[in-house]
Figure 1: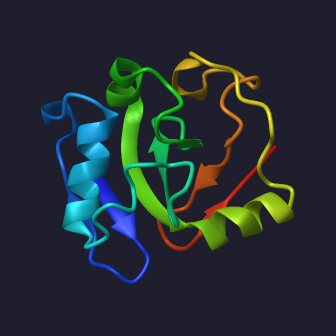
Figure 2: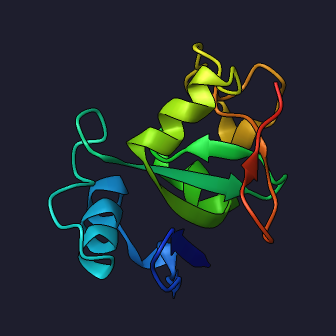
Amino acid sequence: MKVQKRGSVGRSIDVTRYKGYDELRHDLARMFGIEGQLEDPQSSDWKLVYVDHENDILLVGDDPWEEFVSCVQSIKILSSAEVQQMSLDGNLGNVSVPNQACSGTENGNAWRGHYDDTSAVSFNR
């Protein structure tokens, strides 16, 4: 599975070798040279989102670990500014339904969208 961050070379990882989100965040921060900046998603300058098997984009950490591992296709590390811009554009919702596996319904994770491998992120509500 690929992990991408703007301005960096993408990396491939095997999410099944991690025990949980904390270990994943720590390792990704080390890989991309942003140590200590992914561990606290609330105060970090960087946010982790992932693309699931339906090409929906969701926040890393919103689903139980086992569900995340079963449906993640790729991970993107976005700056807070990119996330804020998406919010200002009205592309991100404010309501998140906990334990909604892999965005299976329209009432799933607030960060619904579709990922286009060739360019940026385009979100739908």
